[in-house]
Length: 283
Image (tube, rainbow, N blue to C red):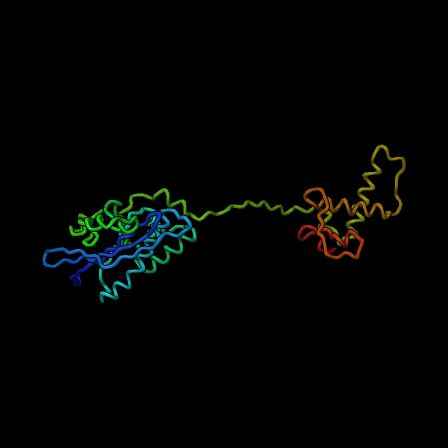
């Protein structure tokens, strides 16, 4: 297996429902003769949890990216030229483009970019991807008849005759891994609390004022036989307090919270009333 400073490493990756894999070929030109040989291959069984083909293809790209440094060190050629080939347009798009992808895709794309340069990744048609033998499997007879050991025939041609390697447009399937975001629209009303909650100096004064308002409303009714102008009674103050609290609740009812205290019979102690934030803070 000849090597020189002009040798190149070509990584082919592929995936199927049952496995994902990567294989590496070295291409060397000696005296106008080009040789291509298999130097390493790696396959992993697909996870038991079903994954989409684009995700499996991306995992195959991870295998190829992880093999780079080990092969360079083994060949003692740290500056050898490297090219990665994949037939998955979706996986290549994730690697080359910056997008807000899902956590699964983001983690693997980050690893691939740390180990390789995204410019080194190229597209190859599926029928020309030699790694298809690894991912889908084949019989011993087919393996003997294939070019598994010598690599694809087109790799011996001049680079200008290789597959174009470019992706013309964004694959539709790439959007399936876009990170989903939720939009919440919140309308804030700065005047959500009425004047009797903001203009009073203390809670008791506010209740008394509200009780007088209710008395005034009662005195204005047609069926009122006599005008009440005496001191506020306990019943009037209690009614005013409950009416005021109901006005502050969103559902026209009093919102309470249960406590674990059981030896008290006072409802206001066993189930204190919940007030809106920043309202009646002086109580």
